[in-house]
Image (cartoon, rainbow, N blue to C red; front, side, top):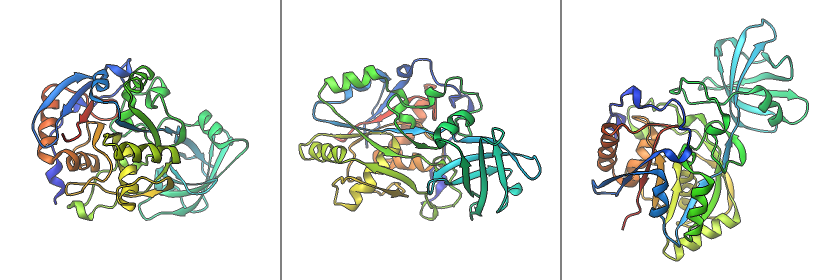
Length: 345
């Protein structure tokens, strides 16, 4: 399957650069899988789409202020470091700019020495492993020195850091937000609970691989970066019970989807409590084992995410929906509007 099959023309002005003042003011495009029926609503309508006995699964990861600006101690050169994932306590995989200035043994100072990082390894894809040294608690130091790592297609400065966090963000460790969850408010979640819908939280720490373009010519050649996930006993028990009782499991975002499908693929469709790393790549032809419906944003052309939603609803249906969204001037990507792929009847 060629990557080019998942390309489409997106006017640049539809890429949302700033979040809406009101989280719930987003629009909601509803897709009926394997038909071309489309409905246009505002996001609060999602409450009406969920039924008692369903289960809504949200990713409670919290975005780190993972972009750091420092000085190379040997020369005073300015270096940008982006934290990707924690390997051990003080060892992190990172991306750096300019990479050619950072070799094994290079030490970078941030915040007049409040945080220091020494390069211990150079990775094949150009990344760097750093060993960090500091006093106190790492994430508190990061809160002081770091900036939010907004996706490369967002060029506006984010005024309020919390607008790039979901209202239920809890487990710190992501290099990017699970953006489908940005539309939810506490009020909407409360209305959903009051309908008798189970709400469960799982964790997947989003890596920057989410934004990396697919560079291979065919889908089968592409390799996903691995991301850490965690599912609790109570979340697993609730999801399995809902499935057994005939309710629908609705994933909020591709990150929740990938976590659930990773675990369900191991255990014949069942969800078990566990932690691990996933590099699952979902594209057309994949048979879903856990989720029935999906709330998601509108994704990049030729991205692994547009392939995932095409696997769930059918490529023709998704591309029809995207062309309608472009015609109706929906906002795209991280700060954009939402789509709901309904469960099959």
